[in-house]
Length: 393
Image: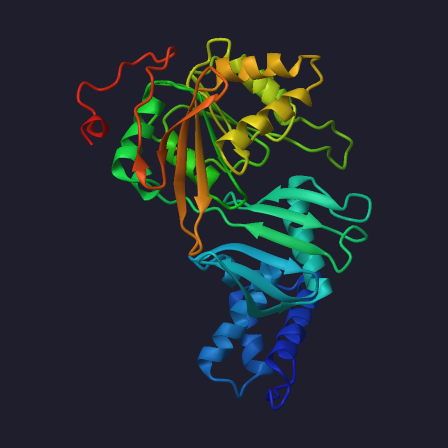
């Protein structure tokens, strides 16, 4: 694996990087050993006029193109970046600190196809013209969405929603009195639906709430793409499976919710309800499985109840709207709504108790703090603390 010694001269570094990558690929195909040492030597041969620092950076960029996420690796590693977006060949965008910005990183179409194949192939998935919509998960739990042509007009498109296993407290989402109320709602085994828009922090908040489930309880989680990272001692994680390229049948969230009922759960956590599985979740809540937690996309607590009604009706059970509302009223105890602020902060902006009557919801807390106390939940196994902090505020 040799290359004539030549300086970079006016040739752009991107071109040098591409040439180096091609040489390394050729060496790999020829069966020659290629590691970081060989790549660094090749960089020194190909670009001897570069400083040692630039040579080292270029070697790492070539290595990144052979493994991991290639040119996106450095962006994914940034702590403040929550989303990495590739809108076809060209510039890469990120959401950093709640703000979208265009980066200096660019990807070509061939590189983009390589990255997509590198992500989906190990999972037994495919992303091509016959299967243009693909969801996948990276080894660290980050979520990946791929859209291929012809659906993607300027594609391929690639979006990475980063997963961050960070230890947050309920006080990071709400004032201390509201955080104390939320802790009690979890320990009292109430059924809670967390609502909010895209990027509002619903999954992160669900992780934080679940940290207050007693250690002696068995938790079964059900997700479309596994993102929850519970630190509890007894957790069973279930993840849906799309149809595979071998023709294996899909395993839906609805299948998993039904199966979770047979796994002797103390708690069932459904990462997000999007469709007919809402009916099965309500059935679990209404049949003695107390303390269930779930999330759904909605703009407010009333809208969350409306969304649940629509999703239950999608199950095709033949129930009337009033019967569905009765089911929801009997199953769900509280709705916690999150919103993202202009600076990217995620906050609890409403805690509402589901009650009978035409209003259906009673607001207990808003962005300003605690406004009222809940009625004692009839399903609570544990009485409120003798002197909870939020009662004195």
